[in-house]
Length: 277
Image 1: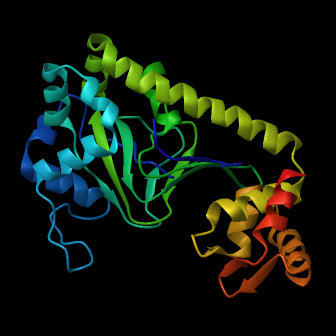
Image 2 (image 1 turned 180 degrees about the vertical axis):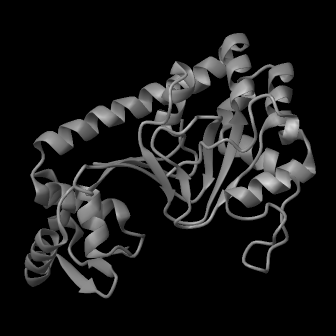
């Protein structure tokens, strides 16, 4: 799948119960409005005050376009998915899922980015992974398949739009649709392979290598990573003072330029080399 899973000691994805299992609220427009508001913002509100809100039918078509492998489902199974999917929206910073929370939806990211992490006993955040557009949350999938609870915490890094299939629909399609099983398991296997790469990085990669890789992953097309030193430290499992010292060294060497609340990559080739060491 062409989805985005940004793996590091690596979007907080929304897996919370938008409605109780078995509640047909996902088919009721009023309930759907209430659910989306609870998730952070009304689905009927105009985005940024300029673009009219999409209709439910338009949202469903955008979801299918973002996850084209769903088109392999039989017409009957795809109709079930179309009829039960709902589209929560999370504002930046919204807590989407608490540790040991119930997994009530299979989640697919349409826009934005979510962040999955654990907190150590000492209060230090350890980033597990991030999910971007076209990606799914592997821990949510594992939770739904096993019947367990969510083993981490989840927060939206920016305004994030999700497609959510209720657990009842997920279980029905997993049991009845070979195409849906392939869709879920192929993506899950790929994402879990990325987590093993993460374990290798956390266990064996030097801090400078992890930091260089993080900057490269966060940078926009202009080479600017809009991240603070504290956020970088959280992402690489370090402390701000150590990260700031490394960044200052790289700035003096001409690899980067430090800005207020951001880091600009000046010499990508040399920074990429630092990320491979």
